[in-house]
Image (cartoon, rainbow, N blue to C red; front, side, top):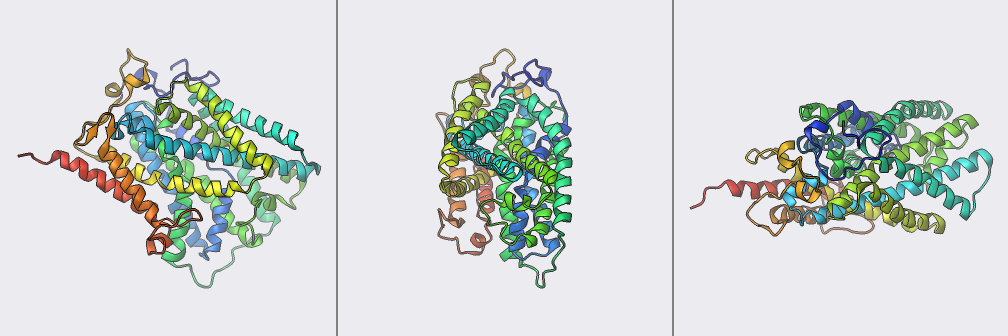
Length: 479
């Protein structure tokens, strides 16, 4: 095992390839990684929203399942890691080109940093609620600042240590806080005497079920597609692609579906839960003091675990944009950036954070067309597969040298993969044409696709097919 990829030793490797002799681990690690990242209680909000669509209980369960199925795509793209030994956005240099890849990398970086900030602020507010509920004490500006920085420092420190430490931490969080999450949900259900309320008329497929599924996809699996191979590149090259995909899916889907269904059961007890400015505070109110403490600690850890992955991956993404700083220092840079933004939101109590979340949702929807191109890049039969030995040179540790080169397609120019970039932009325009949000309404927002919030899926298909056409044109006989 590479000495820099052991638990509690700072991983020095950034976007450089992982060679065969340094591969280790198994797919159980993926299960723990994605399980821990999906135990956050904010998943209860999805259940509450599902109830607002007037779906039946079983319709809601199916919506949760199909929404979490977006992690199948994360698993499929993750196979790239064990084949190439490089992070996801480094693999994207192959279709997009070393220079052309900067644009999608920047979009992914903004998306990850934005959600890091939102989750960090939310976790801090959760601790403030715990202090208020247990000790009836309010922290001032200085105390809130110190608390915010301490929470961030602990999370960023784990990401700074790198891959092996993240695997170890996520495993124990999955085991310990998976149990506490289940216990808290059972206690909430018993305490508030939840029960299934029958719906006289099931929600319509187009008007209720599909929007619910779309909401869960956009908020869960789709936001992780650009990080998929970051956590599979250390796996041995002989690891089964099927096992990688299934471990990713089940690791994410098991806690996610369970929490979404719990949110459905709790929503009737808290009618304003989905629209509340402090939904977790509403849930925790009235519990016995022991369970209040367990509830808030579990909620805080559930929030921060997904931030660990986001910080690590956004650091690799920063390097992908040709920023020449060592990987451990990327965590420090991002601590300063997200900390400054988050502290402003927290101290000023700015309402702009809601607009900021809308902006991030809009940015995240552009990742679907990117995923379509990467999926076509994996599935195309006529291009040689990228295996570890072909993408890495053992004698070189320079990430700019060991980077996967751009595919030499017609239209490739000066480090820009124009076919991939054109397909991506076409998919983005399609997605935005159907988008409907407080910040942007596309010309087709009122169409069936727009009202069902499936514009991202159409954008995915457009990019997938457009890039496939470019690849097919390379195979046509020339006169």
